[in-house]
Image (cartoon, rainbow, N blue to C red; front, side, top):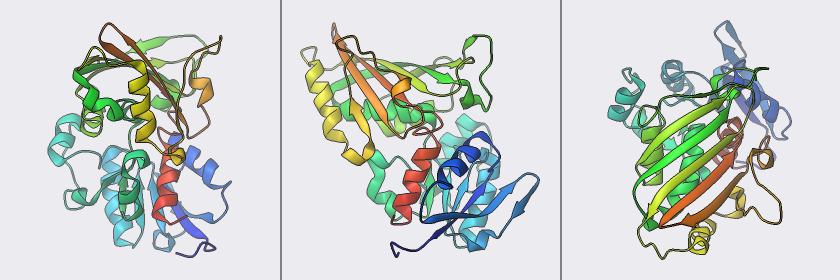
Length: 300
């Protein structure tokens, strides 16, 4: 594809939280133009005019629209959970029939840090979940150094629930243990079984702060060895940085919000690894990771 060609983009679900985030970023980019939009009230433009379609829709709508977009000759990036798991896993965890079984095997998991080359040649991308992204980026590089089940607790801004931040602080834990639909996604792509507690910070708008405790196979494994494993797993384009809290500097979601970056902190204590990963749930956990996939798929 010519480097000077303007790529034509469509967004289904453009008025939702992720759809608006996608629109905001794409409108600032050179070489791409949004020529088609669709929501529950109608559509503008033609899907068939697009090189690539984003589906910022719920699972059921994504299954329908993915097929329509592929039949129209478009590449597809789906932001829902419809194509992240096997048919059996999806139906178990999402509690609905999979209505696009024929195209599900063609989907590529859209985490560029682990699937960059596959993404370049894919026609259908399953953009990862926001919680899952933070867990997979942190756990996958050290999977061979740990054993047993990882205990994960993550906080998220209220935008993860498609809501504005609230004035009164109210932090809600939910879906404890293995009830959250991101659990099988985390385990499948990190290589480590997990139990998971998500916590929504209703007075905070964006950001995910994930904290993982997992037993080391060898209690002599050091912090430095784990940090090196993470550094070796990623390239500069992944925008994943290993950091330490030193000299009074404390790293957190302020370092990654409104970016496509991730930061990872690691500590070791009494045979356990403690890993912290921060991302923007609307950024690397959704829209900007989707745009990274778009750029790979369109040869940008």
